[in-house]
Length: 153
Image (cartoon, rainbow, N blue to C red):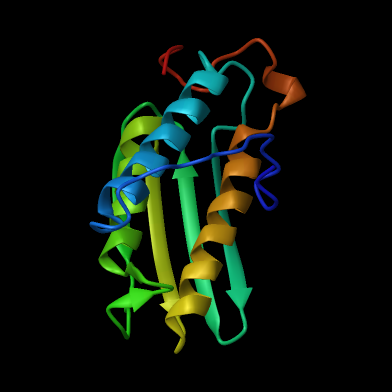
């Protein structure tokens, strides 16, 4: 289970980590995005949009998500080092971009501030989980309605 998103899923990855982390990180984001998109189906009844701010010690991360069917990602961060836990910080941006493409969502991700790259990354991923949880909730008032003025997403 993904703890902060309350998603009942497990992801097991086997990759070419002896080469680098790029394809494994990208493939995990794509697989997660495709699973979310498939689980949401026609999106009837979901809240659709949500955002979350998450503090992690001195860092503050923000994520806003909209399951609009229009994939687009904006990722803003100020990484201090080239890697976190052996993973290139450039792959953080790529993860969110790949997730957005596969989940067919509009995704805005921002590190508002922080000194420690590990804390900044952790704040972003926790904020992603919280925003996912909020956007995928079923709104009883719209249980049979697609949340769009067009009637389709």
